[in-house]
Image (cartoon, rainbow, N blue to C red; front, side):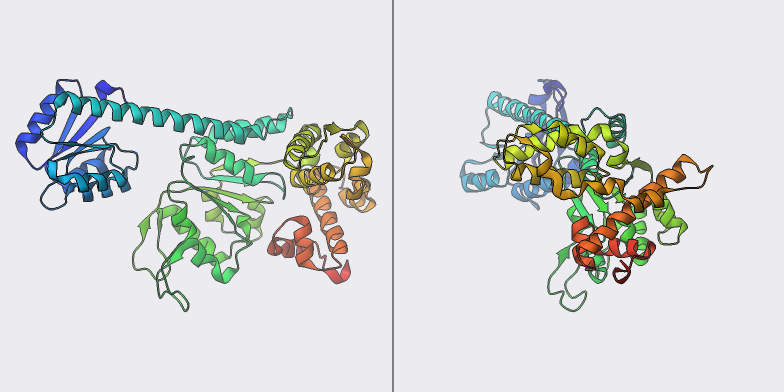
Length: 468
């Protein structure tokens, strides 16, 4: 918010003498003045640069003050508007307040009162701006606070979030299921200048393919059978904010091409529509495996990959950052104790040792779910071994995993890491399929992934339920 001496006032009145008199009053007070003689001209001025305050005559030929107020608020919702009215315009003045006007003054106008009203409007705007900034800072601190651990890897992630949040770069977040990709996306949004606008998260594998485009783009009435009304899509809903495309690798190839065009052109055309509309969205995408490998396999468009991967954040699995396990477990325990109203105060040393040594195929999500369940079931003030025994901690030393991690001598660290990650993922799927007796839908729910992702991985690892 500018200082009062530098504030810009737009005076809109069809009467030349009124404009000159008002301009003289405020110029003598050190304000910057812009003049317009009609509602249409005022809206063009606002579109070019939003003033600090709009002084608006209620009665003008063509577009009257109420219509100007209504349209000005669509362009600049926080703009203070002070209407200047005649004595007989009280009902319209009351309507103007309902439409969002800051105040109205009846002519003849006392100049001192008018200047005081403008100054109060500016002070209110400044205070509102400070409150919004404080709320944004608190939200950002809260979102980043969820990553606060002593681990070097997570400190690096927090640094990357802070680096990229203030930019316009499209971000690609990669990491196994349960590593916190959406949490990172929300933190980026909260740290950005878009934090007051919508954050729209879409699971690209959860929407049926035949509905995906209508959900993303929206549609006009009559666009297809059953389209009995106009419907906005996710792109329109996210206007001005951020859109999080989770599991973006699950997008069909045809939809990938249309998404690429939207990102390039920054326009969206609803299904059945005849024209496109400008769009202002920051895209954040996520994939549970390296997206470039999907490109190499021909399952993901290379040009779309480069559009999404302007900045890449890789979230390491929990088994690779064991220093974070206990801090996270204790935080989840504290949160669950309050939420579930249970008198649990900590985690015993024996239980903590088991947690640290577990492989965590479900990553942070699995840890959180386990701790919440342990808090609910704990019979004393501490989470004990018996409270977490049901998770089957012996899987860490599973022979099948040990055998599958074996790699030829001379392999690179990345090859060893990829092999270990694939082995753990495969073993988790095997156990989920066994637990669900081959029911893929139930197995997907156990693993907390969408059905399509699980189906792709079952085929990749040749793990059809009949053979499990």
